[in-house]
Image 1 (cartoon, rainbow, N blue to C red):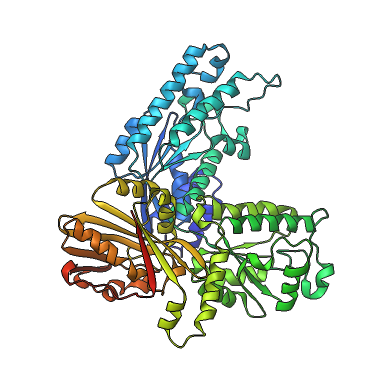
Image 2 (cartoon, rainbow, N blue to C red):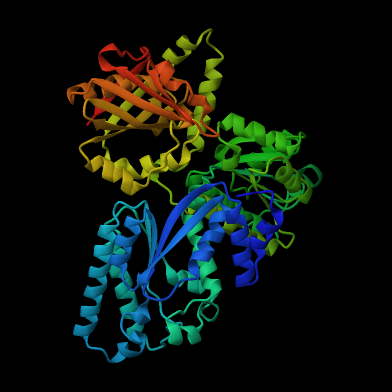
Length: 593
């Protein structure tokens, strides 16, 4: 996107009519230089305008969305069409009332045999479509919904029971495929309201029931669920303290004077927000403090205030001082070894928020509302940015791991050289091959890793599964631990076997374990496996990005030779008989097949 075209961007965000939105989208796409994604839309009603809203939210994430609309009510045929046109992101939207003409109106008098027949037909059609689309990166399947709220005070609502039954069938089919995500259409209707979602005039005239309000909310949720179409992955929430975690100013009101409790306004709002923040921490979000205060004052509140939910142990890092907040946020990013664009900043001060927006535009910034009753709603939007893409078990509660890393850094200062320090850690690496139970984490790590990612390729769960099922691929994952604790699954190597060559498709690793030799110790086993398959050559590729300069010489250090200069990187190769990875005697390894 040409981000200098501020007028078009503002129009894109604030467009109040279809023509204004079309104008803004067209303007931005003409100047667009960002990445592109191909999306397909398949539905049993007319949704031709929905693509415009996908394009809108794509552009807001610096992504150009190319949209291909499928045929009317033909999910299997549409998937086939999409695959032939290099579409690897799809939305399927079946429409309940259109399963038969005026299906909802007939339900009360419909026989069980006919209902069962329609359920089986629904299952079969979408099972075949989902099977056909197994190679796609992601398929969003919308649940069915009614055209109006189903209200029956007798408790014998036939329509509701059948709707729930059919949705259960769709969810059961979706669970069979790792690349399928379910979107709850009724949740969208409950959020925006049925009257705002539908226009019955166009439904009966041309099978086009949805309004722009529905399309906008659906596209917004898809953007959230794909983390901005893969454009961002937020890792850390940077929090002010005064009037953000509690009501009042600790330096002026002192601890007894700040407002924070379960029952009384406004303290109850901040107590609720702190519980929401703690839930984010438990899901893997790193919490940081960035506050202009005396450190001792903030420490006292964290330790002693009876209603504090957030305590010292929940904080991964903090900058409590009188320095400007942009500089402190830069320091936090450096300390945690994460990108500024993976941070969200929350503060009550318009001055501080604007300063961060101006100096660090890559940091997403939110201001606590002046009307405190709007604060929970704002924080709900912040939560979605962290959670909408899903949470794996591996990513939960990272705070302890970052604290362990800080302890390791403190220990490092006690040694005269790096070798002695590394030997003291008791490093262990467990290397696993095609570990299916780790597919969600392997995919997630590909989305999150930037600094140590040799090609910056992102992989869906379906793509990882497909490679594990293919004899010509090997997906290695590594779990790292030391005397401070277990860092979890923190690295992945994907190898493709081509005749006598083992080709490293990608190698990516968490920044939390960089610099310990872990990246070198795994190659002995990978090479041994390649030789056992009859390979004589190892090839690999480095593709530079805006963030992976850290590894621009990794394959050189590993011992490979440059065989070809690329426009955006280098291709490497080496004879396996001549290849010997650098020594890593301080690491114990275990291989699991």
